[in-house]
Amino acid sequence: MKHLLKMLDLSQQEIFDILDLADKLKYQTKHGIPHPILEGKTLGMIFQKASTRTRVSFETGMHQLGGYPLFLSANDLQIGRGEPVQDTARVLSRYLDGIMIRTFAQQEVEDLASYGSIPVINGLTDFCHPCQVLADLLTIREYKDTFDGLKMCYIGDGNNMANSLIVGGLKAGMAVSVACPDDYRPDAQVMDFAAGYDCFSITSSPLEAAADADVLITDVWSSMGMEAEIEKRKIAFKGYQINDEIMAAAHADAMVMHCLPAHREEEITAKVFEAHAAEIFDEAENRLHAQKAVMVKLMSDENAG
Ligand code: CP
Ligand code: NVA
Image (cartoon, rainbow, N blue to C red; front, side, top):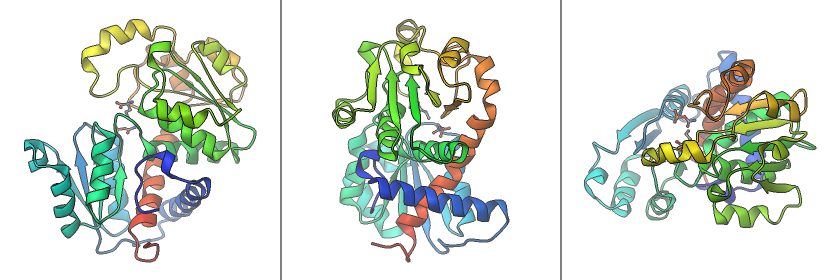
């Protein structure tokens, strides 16, 4: 594993290795055991979109690992004035030990990785959000002990979260069901991947998808960059909500997750959100631990190559 660009690139073993290391680092963090594995290393963090969790968890995680996190707003970089990503990649590779990037086009992240010579971590694109899904898998395993025999259900937009959850969920060994409007299905590349799994299903009916689910997940109806479509999407996604009716269709002990930020009474009711706040904020915390594991895997001398 040289980069973390998308879940499609990871094997099941690589996913489980990251989760196992995340568990170990979480234990060390919780017990105040120092783990300066990335001492002397610098992670550049390029943000072309807003962020609360990704920025703070990467920055804090790098600090806890003994390294230095360098926040780079795209507005302040020459990339914001049109310097090609190919050049940015080659320049930043001379200074840094790793790059985390949050941007729009997946191709930009892939280009950064192929032109640069240091590990690149995808901190969200329009196509996918692998860091979030690794944290989600960590949280599911914490609550349910195993992925075997579980059904994960995603209700909502076929967006970056849907794309990554489908791939991550199936690779981890869960059955995956998705409910989304016909015009907002996941990416064709992901649908092709999922077509190879009998335990994958997609429908336009949230109730059908939620039947007997062990994990229910949703995300905003309008992602970052889709601000012009907010009103249109409010109409298209009406009914694609995790609410009491959906909870009743799922297993009684089903967990609920949301990558956040959440829009109450849109994709999830305030009542369900608060009833499952424990899982949702454990999920947010696990961004820190999962990403520390990714950084160690990609950037430590011990794991080099
Ligand atoms: N879930 C997530 O990526 O949150 P931020 O947009 O706040 O980073
Ligand atoms: N789908 C959302 C996820 C935010 C973490 C977005 O891209 O805005």
